[in-house]
Length: 392
Ligand code: FEO
Image 1 (cartoon, rainbow, N blue to C red):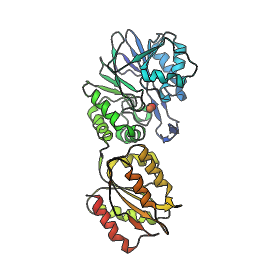
Image 2: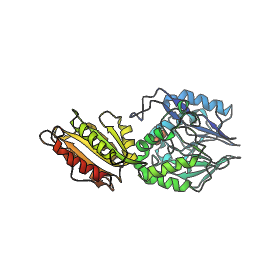
Image 3: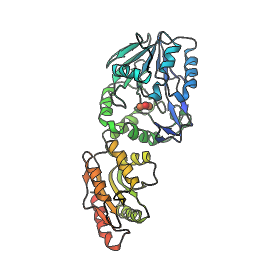
Image 4: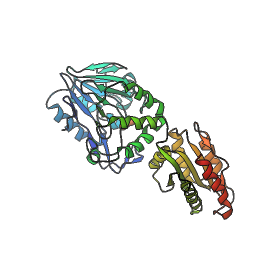
């Protein structure tokens, strides 16, 4: 059993054979459902785990308790990857009280229909302190990071921030290392996690960053990913950039979705033209890129070229899917240019432009470059003009 501080024990579990987190995100390195036990004169369990690892989590809890009885189950976040075992814990420990935001307590019955929580709940609000006799947790509301009921807490004696989903990442701790010591790039899977899970909620994340900025945080203990305790400024800096929808990487993302290669050829030539001007280019084949990875790249660059074929009187579905995901995640503040292709009735450009125009603070570059089936010599000046415009 891992001990994070004098009073804080890790009781979470790794899920190394999970195929899709939230039934949609591939997690080749698994997933961690983090959970903690705080032992003062009183004892608090912080969140539970996903039902997939129920037995293991209950065994971890029993080992950490070592025969003691917990007083509180603190629920920072009610999503089932952290809350699936609430009813089980309440059955096992009849004296246990669920401490959570009023919103979480209001939603609790939805997840455990028929369960009687009467007299076994404690509503927490911003600024409340749960005194555990020797240590204490101060609570901060964090609505929409990532659900409306979320709270984070700060263990005042050790300076540990229990940050709920914030600062989480994909990947099991057996892969990353408990403190992230096995990986050299925390940001890679933390970034994909952030934009796909919390990307839509930039302002709520900004609100949370502001609230905790006054705290003396020595450790970040999220609900997923390694426990962070070194160079914490780097994580706060990245979260600030991401939640402001700023571009982390200078350069141009050229995202193309090509059926038979004609669109791809033009996109690659455009990429070469931009590179020749000394600007970094990232090429991305949208049709072959897993969409959560594509979304991550979409958010990483401030300048983006979208190149796609027309298809069935509409937009080639891989590009539609990509843009639909970006729309869902509140993609914004980007400079975007377009290449469309169509053999008899090109329409991809109009559809991409309409989708991007519906997003906030987008700079649209016109004209759209239109190809008819394949790129011709006479298309090259228009591509050169687009290369000059996108880098402005
Ligand atoms: Fe890890 Fe929003 O649940």
